[in-house]
Image (cartoon, rainbow, N blue to C red; front, side, top):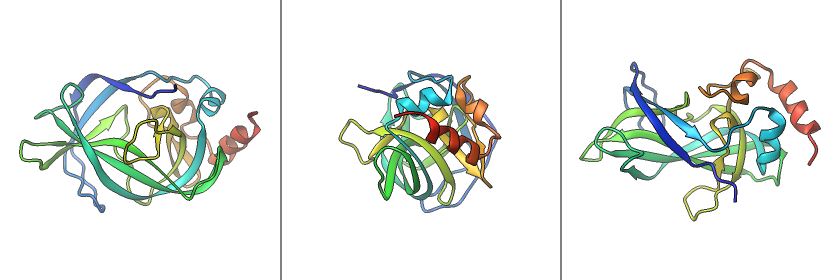
Length: 193
């Protein structure tokens, strides 16, 4: 069974930002580096591994549970959110009008109030209205989401038709950064089943 478990390796503090959206995003950032079990050195490897490759725009972000213990920071709890994306184009796999995946979002204090935003391997929670190229697999557990992102390299923001690969890893995400979506789309469609 494919699995995209992430084990936290280090935690470091960074500067402050804020943003607005349907789910309040608190000020401050806690940056986490994570080891990924799925690492890809080529676009072909990642596309072959993923059951679904889609392009879509974030339409909602909703609370999806709390992580406690080792994977958490601060007071030991991190809010997870379900990110729902309206699919605009399916490049691989069966088409669906929407997909959803889970991300760690922000720390919670002892009273359950939001604290600093969580950024894992360079990626904060996507925001409503942002467009992404996503490499996904079905979520194997009974959860609030339909899919999981196969790697942080599989979460690629599109801005004006150009890929923003923010992954801090050494995988394909960095190599795709700055390339046009049109050329990457052509490559993905040219990869065999």
